[in-house]
Length: 113
Image (tube, rainbow, N blue to C red; front, side):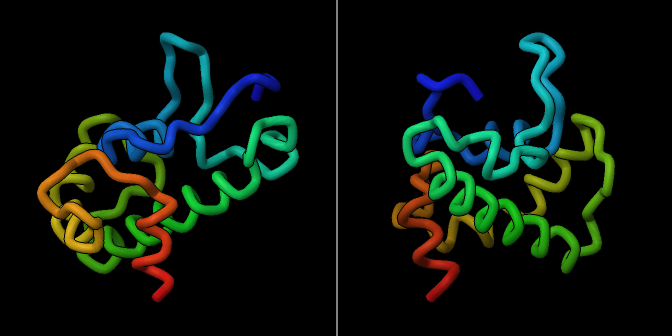
């Protein structure tokens, strides 16, 4: 990631879920799940943010697997199918459950408690 990049903290969960699992052909980026700590070492709070994001995404993946709706190499339609089937349980842990925008910094506190 470029040195001046920052992880977005307040984002729509659906958008970050898509970016975690899918390539962005338009912007020529790979799925965020392929990022490693060394890739974000020059980004402000990069490793901490990547760790928090990984925790949230792994939680969501475990929920999808638990509901037998997880796809290893999903297409866009499958990503949205998974999201719609698990988002309720994920939003229930959010500070504002009716809001699709969340901060994974506070969210990680909920799932690690």
